[in-house]
Image 1 (cartoon, rainbow, N blue to C red):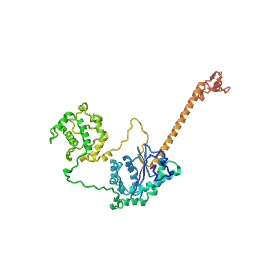
Image 2 (image 1 turned 90 degrees about the vertical axis):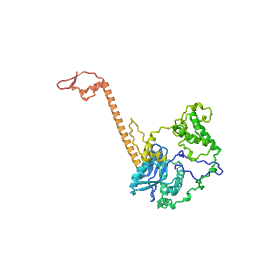
Image 3 (image 1 turned 135 degrees about the vertical axis):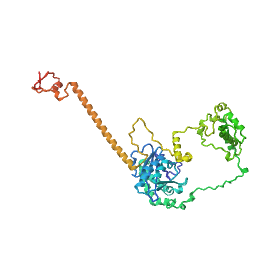
Image 4 (image 1 turned 30 degrees about the horizontal axis):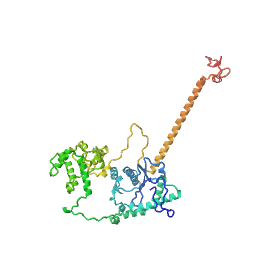
Length: 490
C-alpha cells in the first residue's frame, strides 16, 4: 500500500539496468479493512498499523468514523477483528438504524474464526457466513468489482504525490489519500454492481461467472481395482521405506525386536498386550520396506510425526544407519510402550488444558474431539499480562478505536499533562520560595539581627534601633523599663 509498483518507467535508450530511488519505507506494510453493504454504503474502514502503540498525531489525519488499530506485525489478528466488530461495526449499525439481524459475509481467514466473535455476533443478531475456500475471486464483491480499480487509482495517487513533493509517502499522508481514492472509486453504483455480479443481492446463483473456476479432468478410480494391475513401489520408495524401517528397529530393544520377528508370520499376536500396537507398526514397516503390497486395512497410521519428535529419541541422526550403535540402543527400552505415537508424550501446557476444557464444553458428546483444530486454536483469548507489586496508572486503550474517540483521548491526555506540568511548576516555585526564606533566616541569625519586629528595640531618647546598630557594628548596652516597657541606652 505504501509503495505500489509502477507499470512503466523512463530511461535512456540502450540502458540495460534501470534503477528506482525509493524511500526507506518500501517494506513498510499497512493493512486496510474495507467493509461495504449491499445498498451501496461504505461502512467504517479500519487501518491497522504495526507496533505496540498507535502513531502520535495520526488520529488528526483520519476521518472521524474510521477505525484505528495496532498489531505486532501490522496484520489483522483475531483480537483486532473482534474489537472492530465490537467497538466499530456494531455501534455503526445501531447509529444508522439498520434493522437486525444482518448477514456479514467473510472469507475463511483465521482471524474470523474466533470463538468470542461467534458468541458476540450470535447475541447481537449478526449472522456470519464465510465464502467457499479459494472462491473469493467469484464470490466476494470487493474482489470482483472494487479492489482492482481501487488499487489502480491508488497507484496513480501515489505517483502524483511523488512527482509533486519528491518525497516518499509516510503514515501521515496515507489516510487522507486513501480516503480520497475510496470516495472516488467506491461509488454506490460500483458497490451494487459487485453484489449483483456475485449473485448475493439480488440473490441469483446463476449470476456467478463459473468460467473463472479452475477445473481439472481426471479419470475416476475403479471401485474394484484388479489386484494383478496394482503398481509396484519404485526403487526410491523402497529406499525410503528401508531407511525408516532401519531407524524403527534401532529404537526398539533387541529382546522386543527378536520377539517381533518370531511373531511375524502369526495371524494373532501372542505376546504382551502393551506391545501389540508397536508390533503392528513394526510389521507394517517391515512389509513396506521389503516391497510387499500392504492392504489399506492393515496399515497403521502414525499421526503428528514431525522432526521435533526425534529430539526426544536418545540417538544421534548421523548414527541412525551406522552398524555400531549397540551401546546406545541398549539404553532405550520401549517394551512397555503402548504405541509409537505415545512413546514420548509431552505434558500439555496450561493453554492446551484450557483449550481442551473449552472444546469439551462446546462438543460434550465427543469430549472435545469434534472441534476441528483450526477452530480449537482460536478458542482462547490472549490474556493481558498482570503486573504485581507495581501500580500501573496508564490508561489502556483498546486495540481498535475510532479516530474521533482517539482524538478525544489524546486531547484529554494533553490537558491532564498540562495540569500536571502546572502543578509541577507550582511545587517548584514553592520549594524555591521556601529555600530563599530559609537562606534569609540563616543570614539574619548569623549577624545577630532580631527576626521578630517585637524584639527590634528602639531607644525612647535617641530613637535608634537595636538592629541598625548591630549591622553597623555599634555595641552599646540597653535597658528596659519595667513600668512603661520602653528601652533606653545605658
